[in-house]
Image 1: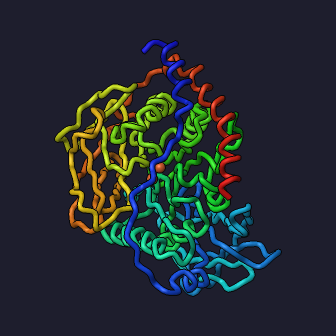
Image 2: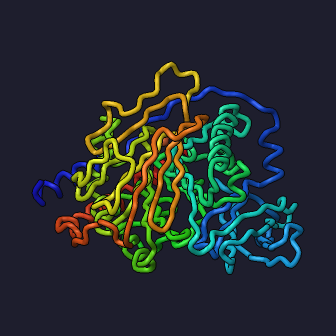
Image 3: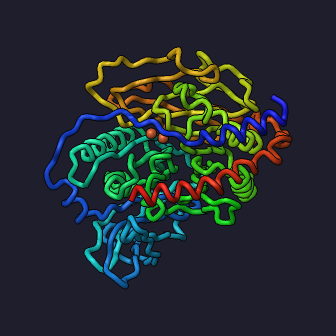
Amino acid sequence: MNKVTKLISTALCLILLFTSVLPINIGAVSEDDFYVENIEKNKGVYLSPGADDTEIRVTWYGGKDDVDPIVKVSENENMTNSVSFTGTIHSNEKVERSNHVTVTGLEKGKTYYYVCCDGTNDTEVKSFKTVADGEDFSAMYVSDIHLTGESYDDPTLYQSAKNWENALVEATGRENISLILSGGDQATEGQPHEYYATFLPETLKSIPFAMAIGNHDVKRFTYDALANYPNTKTNNISKSLIHGDYYFVKGNALFLVLDSTNSSAADHYKFVKDAINENPDVKWRIMMFHHDLYGGHIESRESENKLLRALFTPIIDKFQIDLVLTGHSHRFSRSHVIYKGEITENLCDKTSVTDPEGTIYLNNGTLRVDPDSENQDIIDSDLKSEFIATDYISETKGIYNILTFTDDSLTIKSYTYGTEKPFTEFTINKTSQQGGHPDKPIQAWFVVGKYLGTVYNIINNISRKSEIRDRG
Ligand SMILES: [Fe+2]
Ligand SMILES: [Fe+2]
């Protein structure tokens, strides 16, 4: 495609941005008082990553007026010699009070205990562990967990919360997980009770939880008051409507979390460039955002996908991203090695690659499934695009992945919930910091082309804002 055609097609595709298809419905079970009891007890506490392993962030609901949120941290379970960290209060039309506290000065490779204080009852003592220097670590990757329900006492909400909790318990039972990554669509309608259910599981009170924003999360402003992440980008030409890009370092990996509902490629480019300049020697570069670029499973979304590939892949190629984590299509897929929109290494029937000349794209399925569906699971379907090495489609089983990072390897094990062995496993090996990534300048058309997405985002934010207000 020549430069002019590419620019025109990009502009035309912009109007087709960000359509959504509702996910599959699930069955429902109920449990009396489930939420009331838990709301009183744990206040929706969740941990999130700090800038690196010397920090952690704590977020929870509620508190007494005029009392600052405080997290007390101790090396002892009885909380002796605790150190206090004071945070800030965040609120908007959907969230009355969300407390955000950043705990700093942590030693790597240590267990800490903490309580949250806000002028009402303190939370129960919980613990977390930091990753030691040079230590291998594992992260769970999930997307489209889709907490769903009309109110706190809707049995459907309880069921989706149980699906989520079950997956967390199973994954953390398999490996020593130090990080939970969620690629967007946490809350189907973006409602406060859906996020409350998202933060309910005990696992999120001891392992940091990093979320990307999905098209369902941007239905309301709730997420904006609840997301508590480091290194957020603030000097945008066109900022995200809700929250925005952020990054953090865990062990020897840099995690770049992008808002793919923001089409401003110029801003994403600057964000990634700055993050990498700040962390040039971190071995693994992982990017996470919501939209599935290469899966090809949903024909009606291919116009949007073409646009998103035009906006995001030049950044991924230029900055030598090893692995891109996405979701949205509710279809699992893992790609071949891709660089500049071409397959540089076919990975069919391979279980590893060393120094790949490009990027691998891993798209998760969903936890929003119907165990009673009569549709059979399909592996290596005919529906995947030519860019995909393997896929898995299931309407009955939730899907998640465990990524294990060592200094020279990144292993991805992909599981369906409730099965003993991964349905697929793949390892990326790197023999140097750069690995096999080509070191070439940004594609020429993108120098100007990235601003098309920015202009569109400025316009789109106006209409999106009004749609959210109308939704209430
Ligand atoms: Fe989704
Ligand atoms: Fe989505």
